[in-house]
Image 1 (tube, rainbow, N blue to C red):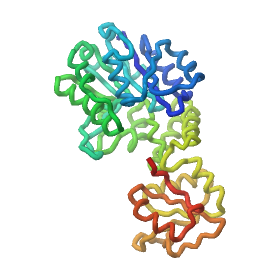
Image 2: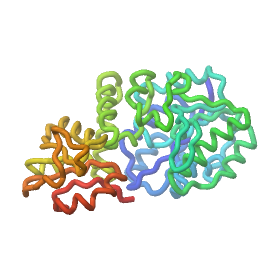
Image 3: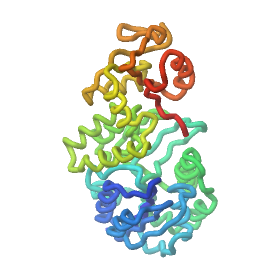
Image 4: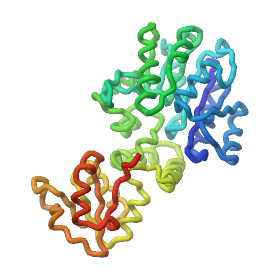
Length: 369
């Protein structure tokens, strides 16, 4: 059996360790000899005690560079000095996902027999997010083998990598950068989605656009927290149903964490709890828009036994049997409207919506940074 060390990076804006984190650490300890925890930012006393149940090696740093910055500091021995020669494999992972839905053993056993220098759970295909993104293994869970750990150039990669200041830089400098470094130097990396021959689509992040398919078809072991966004509501619903019916994972771990994030106003642009409260407040609710967000909102309302009157549009070319024009809308005091638009469309038409509706009768998506 391989000698494995796991390095877990924790960050929460309020320093709270949710129960899903405890389950994640409990499960990873079955597969590794030792666990190191790096806390980015602050942590409350009660949550620190939770982490101490799983590791006595807990280190603290600022959130400089996010998880990529923590990995950089770890490999450059800025946090703790270890003998990398002692380990066959070092797993670096963070708290941005729920799981494992299935036993980690299945994945560790599989990759132990694969001739790779590093492996992960998912790959992102080529795409474009402000800049061109090359295919890469995603960095929320990576296992790095001794072949890399014994190469001075591996440590030079971390030395040269700057601390990212935003998400795009983290992807480009850490995730894409590391995959490119490995390819350039002849190192082989594979992800679970690769070995299961998952069909990637240009610019589509598989754990968001195909979360249900990944879990159902190839037993993908995690659910990314980013999925819990109104844009992916239909995907979320299928994932939750599958987990309840086909796994031993306690769905309450997800539900409680999402509920907390909503209470802390961290689920954006559509906060599920606030949206529900808005709909309960009014006798009748209209939905502005007919696109992805609007349809997702309708499904959310139906699933929660909340009624809506009809869709509203500002352009007559989008008007159909279930739509009325904005200029035809006359909201009474007991009526409200949900502005179910993506940011670009919202910015284009919100000034017009305000001419016909009082702001207090509108549910507005939160696109503030």
